[in-house]
Length: 266
Image (cartoon, rainbow, N blue to C red; front, side, top):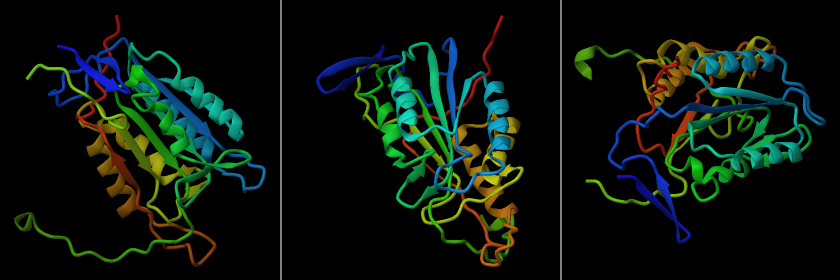
């Protein structure tokens, strides 16, 4: 039986049984992957190396059968216009949607367009189940490569431990269900980027390329956090920054495991 979504007294069908443990990823299209890549700003330093992150994302998500589109250096009004247009499209034949934002950022979930800063919530609020009904019950993925403050993080030496130390019915969906937010760093801290791209985006693409056929997304994000957190240390001319660490984070309201099942094309 098809579940029903009730939002503001409006009923919307959701083609997913409520007890399924894995998101169905068998619709005609995987969905859109949209990259907002900000390199040039009016009042911020240029983000050198971000083109390498863009290329890595394009390669990885094309390989996952997404329809990939890139928007470079948009101002605030153009970002909001593109997001508004995206939220109004019909996604009935799509598995999910994925949005990347590569930019400068500050604490409080603010990120920068070419001219002004804005809240990330301005983006994802457009895709809640009551605002974008054809994505109701489907994964909505957001990945943010940006600083979330100006603090630097130091590491400590850790002693490793040995292995021995270790019913069919209609239903309602919360409007903020089925979201995944991946951040390159935790609140208040720097996010590092080199001339060859950022350690977060490069590692994210590397892990997904290697494991997407067998591993669910949340487990891959944990692997990404481990690799970035343990294997990368900043090298920088500024002695306050050099030798410091970075810790990616993610939050999720996904309600099922997410595997990027291969699409079978004739």
